[in-house]
Image (cartoon, rainbow, N blue to C red; front, side, top):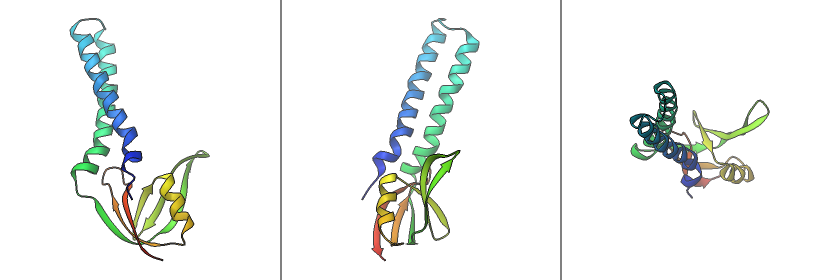
Length: 133
């Protein structure tokens, strides 16, 4: 079971928008259609978008994934200021992030023993294999 498409969509979109925005700003600066100060501010914003995206996506796809095996413990929803921001569980000594779909599947089972592959940049479970209960 793979959850890669749901994990990478936001970061991929942010990286593409950042690259397009950076190209647009450079073009505007070269044609002198925008002031230098505004161009630098927007350029830094778009560079930030690209770097945050790259910091997550590149380790996930270029580095070998972390493989963990053990019992799912402390399955929980994470809230920030009363708003749901994610789902996590502990396996061994590591806390990993999961998609809402996988969270619901794990909630139906009683602390199963699993083997997971975790992306090094996003810390999301990319692949899960149920070993037992």
